[in-house]
Length: 227
Length: 353
Image (cartoon, rainbow over all chains, first blue to last red; front, top):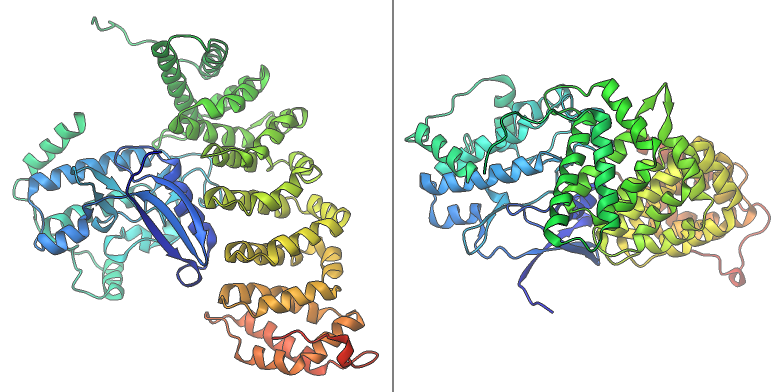
C-alpha cells in the first residue's frame, strides 16, 4: 500500500452551517473533478460533529500565507503569470460543470514543486443540478441568485443578486485575485466588508494600474496557455 | 503529417447519437483490442458525448435548438442507445462520465410531441433503475454518478413508485449510514427525493408501509448515534409529516407514545438545528386534538420541564412563525390535564427533559 501525506479539512457542522446540502457539495464536488490544477478529495467521513475531507497535502500551503509571510507587497509578475495561467486552466475546466464562486488567493494552494491547485468548493454550484439554478434548460441563459462568496472578491452582480449572475462572476473574482497577487491584498480591503459592499452597490470606483507591463503579461499568459 | 484540406462536415444530431452508439458497441464487444486503439475510441466517445451535451444545453452563447434536441431524444430511445449509455457509464473516464450524466439528466426532461418519452421508456426498462439504485453498494465515485442519474429518473412518478415499492427502500437505511460521507449523503438526497417529490405516491407508500417504515426510521435514523444521520432524519421527517398529502400518516405518527418519547429526547439534543427541526415535529403531537390518554399523560407529567424548556428555547433568527408556533404549543401544554388518571410511580412515564 502506498503511503502519502494527506491534509484533512475538518468542517465543524454544528456551528458553521445550517444547510447540510452545502456540506454535501463541499465533499462531493472535488471527488468528481479530475484535473491537474484542481485539488482532488480522496474521501470524506464524519467524526463526531465534524466532516473530515481527506485531500492531497499541499506542502507549500496557500498563496495567501505565502504572500502574508514572505511577500506582503505582492509577488513579482513572472510568478503572478504562472499562478494566473494555472488558475485560468482550472477555471476553464471547472466552468464546464461548475461555478466556483469563491476565487481568491486563500483558495489557491501550492505544492512543493510549484504546482498550483484551486481548492475549496464549499460554495461552488453545479450548473446542471436543478436545485441550484433558476434555469436548467441551457447553459447560455443560466443564472444564480444566491449571495455567496467573500465580499472583497465578489462581483457587483452577485451582491445585486436579484438580477442573477453566471460564469462572469468567477472572472471578476479572478481579476480581483490578480490585483491581490500584485499588491498583497484585494482593492479596498482597508474598508469594513459592509461599507465595501455598499460602495460596490452604489458607486463606481477606479482600480489603479497595477501591472508595469500589461501587454507583455497578457502575451506571456497567452503563450503559457498554449503550452 | 498532412493537414486535411477541408474540415469534416459537422455531424447532425442523429449522427452524433448513432456514432456514440457504435463506439460503445465497439468498446463493449472488443475487450481484447490493443490498448492504443481502445484509448482512441474512448477519446472519440468522450468527444461525441460532449458534442451531444452541447446540443442539449447550448454552448454558453446560444440557446439549444428545440428541433435538434427532439432528434437526439428520439434517437436515444429508438434503439436502446439510452440503455447502452447507462450500462457503459462505469467504463467512462470521470469527465466523460459527468458529461454523460448531464446528457441523461437532460433527456429526462425532453418532450417529443408533448410526451416525456424517457418516462415511457423507463417504465419498460425498470431493471436500469434497479441497477442505478444498487450503485450505492459499489465503491468509489461511480456510486455518485449512479445516484445522480437515479435522482433524474425518479422525476417520473412511475419510476419513483417502482423504487418505493421495491426492496430498495429497506436498503436505504443502510446506505444512509455508510462510512463514506459522499455516498451516504448522496443516498440521503435520493431518499429525500423519493419521499417528497410525488405527493400522492408517497402518501400511498407511507400508508401501506407505515409499520415497518417508521420502525426502521425511528430506530436506525432518529435514534442513530451519528449526528449527521439524526440531523438529516429529523429534517426529512418534518418535511414528510408537514406535507398536507400525508395528513393521515401524520395523525397516526403523532398518536404514538413511542414516537413522542423519541422526539422529546431529540428536543434535548445539544445541537440547535436538531432542536429546531424537532420542535416543528413535536408541535404536531401537542396540537393533535385527539391525543391518546398516554400521550396526554406524558405531556402532563413533563409539563413543568417542557414549559421551562420552551421558555428559553429561541430561534436565532427573528422568525414570527416560530414565535407564534411556540406560543401556541405553550398555551396548549398549560391547558393540558390528565384525561383519565394521573401517572403513578409504577408507570415510569416521565421523559427527562
